[in-house]
Image (tube, rainbow, N blue to C red; front, top):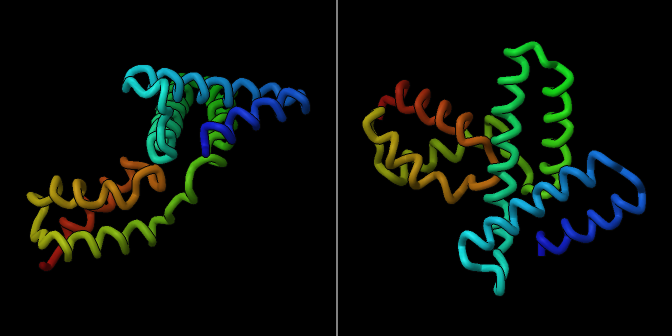
Length: 153
């Protein structure tokens, strides 16, 4: 289970004295525990899919922080956030390339019968389970908008 792997990796990082990794893994472990409590799953634990959702949110938070730090000229803090993202990404499924996302979007548009930009919500709703934790939602949204705008359906 992913949660157990994270806990074991915390122990290994402590033995190896990797401070950044320890810090990041503790943060995501805490986020997972908080989510378990919020969902009332402290006894049963969360599924790997639910853990992936938490990890994807943590990556998104850090990406948002990076843009804020860069606009404020705090490059060193932005770099720290990038390093944290690298640690978290090791626990997420392989990320989809833009080409793979475009292919999935095209398939989903055909399946859903979308005809224009008005069908954006329908496409995103159908697409979300296919890409959960495997792609940045903002990037996917932009690709869907672009394809629907260019759509000659």
